[in-house]
Image 1 (cartoon, one colour):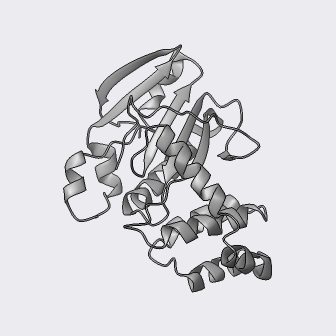
Image 2 (cartoon, helix red, strand yellow):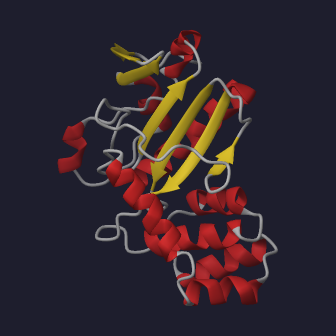
Length: 218
């Protein structure tokens, strides 16, 4: 349950050679999410992010990196590996979406079924998971998050090409109150995302600005 915060600063630059990127390379706003496929807060953020992507179109470049919390989400690690195995067959975003849309069904049997639904090479997919082929990649993402100041999912880090983008940046800075950490993991509703105050950190021209904002992007 993390907002974009001053202490979360991307230490591993976005790279087209290794990152999962949705959107144009010249998008005015780049949003990096460190997420966990089994985290209910990530699951609640997923449809909101979809709406924002649709609204901003080519203006947003979205990047997803793995940050599974295995001590509380026992299926998150293998789900992340499944997404990476799908990426090796050119279907990362399809698997990413499928995992979030079926977040409560992430056993090995479910992952196999999702791969089948996506038309993947099942023998290759199953073997990749059995051999933990993509565990190092998931760990690499996780450690890049730790070095960037991420301490839990979902954490969003964004940067803009110009101060003009500051007017839309609040649409992607999703804040969760820390008091929720002491409560059972109940996902926020889409309406709660839209109406509660959020914290926005805009990194623009080498300067930070911090504001309390209301979403108001609809």
